[in-house]
Length: 134
Image (cartoon, rainbow, N blue to C red; front, side, top):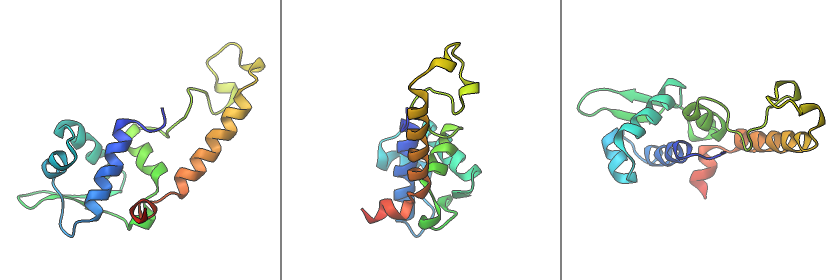
């Protein structure tokens, strides 16, 4: 599935964090977005690990954007929290990598591969700044 709950929560968290001048704590985000604190913590850690967020410890700690909103693209956000690039279908990116024994006669793979390429390009060009403008 392309947009999972983890991806959705990551984007919602980035929106809230981008609107704050101070670090935003996971507890505040959890409460404001009605998201499980433990699930949200994993998402925020993944975003920090991948250079999208900065993490600050202590009483006034929390998270801030590590990059400008125009430099945060949705493909990287989604790949960060999913652990892999988002896909629309459970189809291999290459016919030779297809787990099916019928890959050589698959008539839909070329279409799915083109569609995935267009979605990847769209997500790579869609930034947090674009979302904040809407």
